[in-house]
Length: 384
Ligand code: UD1
Image (cartoon, rainbow, N blue to C red; front, side, top):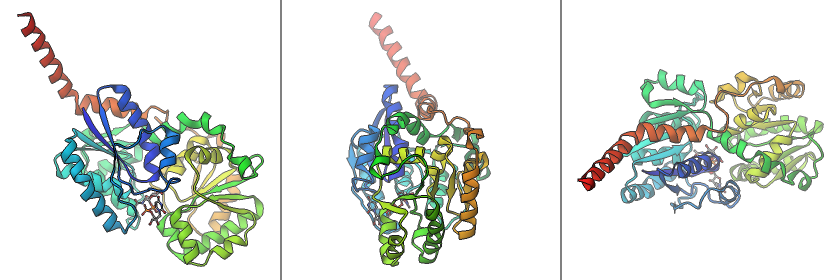
């Protein structure tokens, strides 16, 4: 059974790691790993492969950064010959980045089955490039694997046939649970001169927040207040670093003594940072889920979330980008008692195994039966 697994950007790597493992363990699937090269820096890509034990990609398309149109088009152009050459039974894409929709389109146009892992999530905000990628990928997929019930409900509301939708849990959480013990051994707290848990961790990279100087400045106002209270550690995304300079906000950052700006961290160091933090501030999607399982309070610096279960369960507050709402959320987070919050159903470390089992049954079930019957017939012939 030939399957192409696609990765492109940083959040894809922790999703593909358990899927590659489960494919290999099944011994029935031959996974080919294709990296589009959307992310390429050591700290945005290679480091994650090493730390998560993901095999070297069989093919790297090396597309790099560009505008949305050019990047998507370059991935499409480079991926088509790979599919034509390898002739897979299916292509599996994860998440909502440009690599996801680009490779998905190539697959379906060549008549190859498309599998989308992390299907159905919706922010209902079409100004987010990821929302467009999610809607389009889901609409052309043959197998849609969801992390939470809202994903299933959204897909059904959009008219996707029920038979294509499977609630399997969260592959990103598979990776987190698999690496928690290793992460605890990271010495990142010493490196950053942090004692105990009295600090906040921050990530920020959404275009709506960091490509707009007014919004970016407003978030900075709130960070200024919080850093008066506790240190903030900010591993900064390349997009954010570039904009910080071009909007001349770097001076303001320098004036905040308790806001520590550092290079992007590897998976294990960042996990250790989250495990140890008093709270996390972020505009990432995946981090809302990771803090949920870790029971660390999270303030989401956006007006919406495509992962509503994290807010329903209570570990996550969606506070937007206004000074008053962020600081109010901060006070509430300090007083929350998260140990009472539940873990979303099926976030148990076995999502990738469920995905592979379903694929073996529903996608390749017929093929396995065919192969078995051929074997039986051949042995009968031999006896005769
Ligand atoms: C992409 C995803 C986003 C995801 C994020 C995680 C899309 C539309 N967006 O956004 O959903 O949350 O990845 O990081 O696919 N750059 C580097 N080194 C790299 C990669 C990027 O310096 O290895 C810089 C480049 O200047 C590039 C910019 O970061 O132009 C943005 O990278 P890009 O992949 O276009 O989008 P992200 O903001 O990373």
